[in-house]
Amino acid sequence: MNTIKVSLLHPQILHSRVRENRSLVTAMAGEAADLGARIVVAPEMCLSGYIFQDRMAMAPFVETADGPSADAFSKLAKEKSIFLVAGFAENDPETGIYYNTAFAWGPNGKVVARYRKVNAESRWACPGPPVQDNVFDTPWGKCGLLICSDTYHSLPARSLALKGARMILIPSNWPPTGSFPEDVWRFRAMENGTWLACANRTGDELDFNCQECESYFVDPQGKVVARHKSPDSLLLSYEIPLTHSGDIDAGPRREEILASRRPYLWHRLYANLAFFRDITAGFKLPAPGVTELHLVSPGKGKSPADALEEGAGKLSPGSVAVLPLQEWDDADVARLEKVAKDRGCTVLTAEPDAGYGDGEDDRTHILVNADGADRVPVPFDRTQELMHLGTLAALPVRMADLVHPETALEAAKRGADILIAVERELGPDDLFTVSMRPIDQAACCVCASDGAGLGLVPEGHSPGTGSVIRGNGWLTVQVDSAPLRVKRFQDRADFELLFQGAGNGPWEWPGRPDRPRVLPVSPEARKPVAWSPVRKPGGQRP
Image (cartoon, rainbow, N blue to C red; front, side):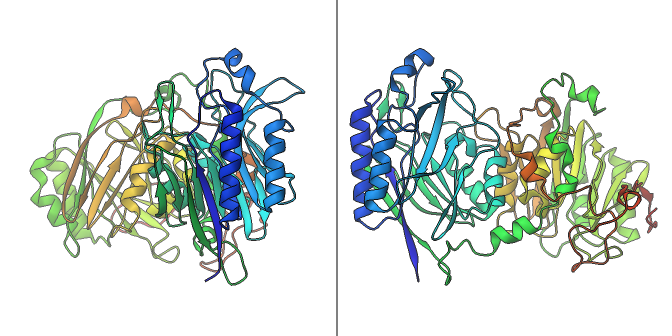
C-alpha cells in the first residue's frame, strides 16, 4: 500500500527563548525530513511559548511573515523539499496588529497557506478573519490549517472539508485540562471524514504544565491511530495511506457526509444573537425550569409500549418519556395515551413515513399527552418547528442529521434547548455523537431499542456531562432548561462557503432517491408549506 509519511514535532518549548526554540524546531523538522517525512507540523506558538499577560509582554517576541524565523523555516522547507507548518506570534507590519498565526511553506520555500487563529488569546492577539486562505495543494491532495482551540468550534473544520481538505493539520498548545482535546479532535475527524494531524508540545511554562500534552493522528472514522506524550522532545510520525491515484485516502465518508448536507434548512445559522438579552421571551419558549426526561430502551425485539407500561410508576406529572422508532398501530398508540393520561406525562416517539419517500428519511413524530395523540409528519427536506415538552424547547431529529454541526447550531439559534433523536437501533458512533454535539449549544439525546444517551452543554471548554445506557432500561435525567438558554456562539465563520449553492430550498422535488439536490423552480413553488399536526389515527398530510 502506498503511503505518505507525516511527522508531528513534539518539542519542549522554553518560554521567551525564541532562538533556542527556533534551533530546536528546525533541527527536529530536518531530522523528520531525513527520516522520510514529506509533511512536517510544529506546534502553536512554537518560538516564544504561549503565556503572555498583555501586548507589551508579547511585543519582544512577535515576528513578521518575512522575519528571521519565517526565513529559517522557508529555507528548511526548500532544502529538504517538504511541506512545513509552524505557528508563531505574527506582527502585521502594515497595521501593527498581532496575530496567533500558523504558516505552511511548500517545497519551493514559498508560503502556501496562512491561518490566523480566530479564538485568539484575548490579552494580546486579534482574532483572525472568518474567510482565510488556509487550504493548500500537495501532490497527495488538499490539506487545511487550523490552530488548537479553533477546532473546539465545529464550523472551521467543516469549512475546510467543504474546501476539499483531506487532512487537517493543527498546530496546538492544548494540555488535557477542561475539554479533553482527544475527544474534540476525534469528533472533528469523524463528522467531516478527514484525517487530523495535531502537533502538541511538552515542557513547563510558568504555571502551564504541558508535560501531559499529547500529539495525535486521527483517521476519518474518528479513531486515534497514533499518539504521543513525553517530558522530552520527540517526533511522532505516521504513514498516511494513499489511494491508487496517489491521493490521501479518506475513504468515501467525507463525500457521503458533504453530499447529505441540507444547507437550505439552516439559514438561521448566520443570525446574530449577540444582543439577544432574553431568549425565552424573544423566541416564546416555555418558562425555564426542570423537566424529568425518561429515555426508554425496551431491548431489541421488545415492545416499547410494553416497556412504558411496565415502568409507568417512574413517570411523574409533567415528565417526558421518549420511545424508540417503530411502526405504531392504533392499538399501541392508545396504550401510550392511557399511560400519558394516567400519569399526567408526555410521550414522544416516531414512525417511518413511507407515504412520502423511502420510508426512513421521512418521519412522523407522535406526541402523546392527556389530551390525546398528534401525528406530526416531518419530511426530511422541511424545517420542523420546536416542540414544547414541559420546560424544554425540543427539536426531534434523526441521528443522520447530527453528523452535521449546522443542524445543532441552527436549532440552538432558534432557541432549542435539546435535540432528540428517536431511532430503531444505535449506530456505532451515536452515543459519542450525542455526548459531543452539545458543544454546539444545545443538549442532545438519542433513544433506541438497544440503548440511550444524553449529553448536556459544557461550560466554556469544560468537558460535557451526560449519561448512557446500553441494552434495555430507562435513562432518567433531570434537565434544567435555564442554563441551556445561555448560549455562546462563535460567529466568525465563512457563511458564504457554508451556504454555497443552497438557494431557498427544493420545496418541490420529484421522487427520491435519484432526484437532484436543487431544482430551478418558480418563486411560488419555493414557498414553504405550513405543516400542521394531524389527529390520529392515520390523518392525511394537509
